[in-house]
Image 1 (cartoon, rainbow, N blue to C red):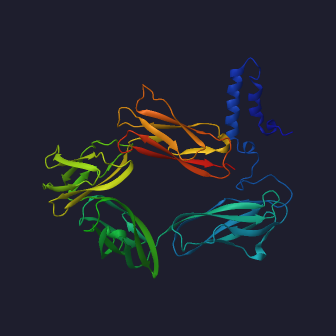
Image 2: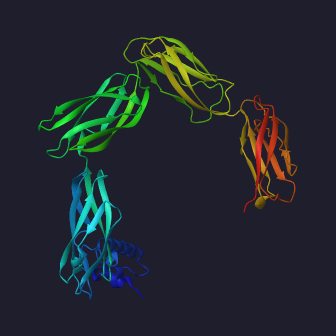
Length: 472
């Protein structure tokens, strides 16, 4: 039988022998903790003699494949190149080591070795060549390669080929364009583009800007080291939409005749001469009709006063304006109308102003309108496994003092409907109980509808779907 004590150094065994009596539990626990710490720090027996390939093994008959490191670090390498590296395999055994196969998980990485070099004698070593193609790569790379040998204990050794592929050109000071409350037509940032390799030439540059967010102008520049590059000055497009921006720019540069694309991030917010705070109106929880939302403040960004000509708040909102707390501010107050439909509602409030550069201020709103009469669950399900169990439906309305159920019926004769007596303590809540009146289940999936008549204006008739499912 395997005994862990056979794998524990003798200086650790002394801790086990101490405090093992039944009358010294605290000492035993303390000593056990010392054993665990020793196991975590002991490099050989704590790993169960697992071979790491970076340490020689004990002498044994047969070949032994040994690699000084399992990581082949190619360092910083340029794109569009075939990079050459190597790894050394040593034979620490007493028989010939045969390198049977070399493989990689990615086609960009290849291991090569001549057939005449696949036998490594005892105490010998052989260099394996590693080729890494950076044509379609960029940034940090980690590729897994495998070496198959006739080592009887460890026939497969997995190695990692890592590198950092840098682009043929770089965008300085960073591949990031920040729009911090930028305005249409405003110049925001100048970036410089230079080739990264010594002696390389940046022959051309194209920039793809999605959605006409930015405009740019380019000019030839030279840095302090005398390297020629291209300077790019960005400005916000005049026709850009206001609001948050989070997108990408594609820089396609040609260096020494080879084209490459580098992606830059554009993030921030476009504002006009009128600032809007908050930029939208939304409700996280269901909103009752008649609710008045916190005002939206319109503030002149350039200090020039403006006036509101009219407000189009749509069919389900009332809107009013008032003077804000700060001179020049105008507050827009919105209130949910009684005719708003149940459930999620989305629209845009349009505020028309006399500001020539921003004649329309748009305020999106997203509201979940509280139902006039809430039904839980919204769908009733019967299944054959629990046919005899009653189903209870809860109805609640906050727009009446007492919820009354005028009638309740189902269009399926197999389902009986019973209206539960109202509660004096909860007059706005009522219950309806459904039962499967027939003991025989249908042979296939079926559906029905429960129709409830109430005294709630706008929800006088409520239809609740009923489903009968055959559980297989």
